[in-house]
Image (cartoon, rainbow, N blue to C red; front, side, top):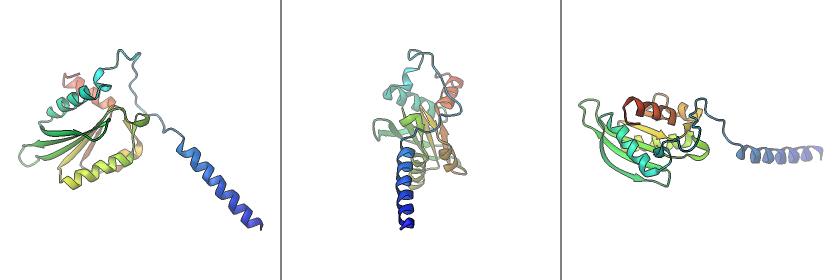
Amino acid sequence: MQIFITVIVAFILGLVLIFFLKNTQPQPPRESIQFDNDNEKPSYLQDPDEFRSKCLEFLEKFNLEYRHSVWANDSELEIDMQDETPVVGGKYLALCIINPPYNLVDAMKVKGFLDSVRGEGAARGIIITTGYFSDDAYRQIEEEPVELVNVHSFLKYLKSFDIY
């Protein structure tokens, strides 16, 4: 009888721990961009249409020819591009994510995009976000043809390309 009580208590304790685990927020990113107030924050980090325009400008700097794009939902823009460069050219896919939940893109989202890149037969893929990527997301793309660009890198690239 004592074994059954121990098993039941352990089971209930496990459920309680799972409940609390689901309700915890992920760790904050190591590098972060801080704006003193919302007026300093560029509008393209908040407005989906302006974010789309900046993403397209950014991708054009890599000699990628825009084909078409579609909003998968309110925060995810999927872009199809073509690189006409001989030998290394081909189809490229981009996923632009504005305001991800908890300001973090998780490994499942990256894995799903990686599957899309493979399924579409694209040469490479790139995910651009106004947030950050989890450590698991970076582990997902090791040795894969996908680049991850978080908000810190995105702003750095935009400044270096003079399209900030």
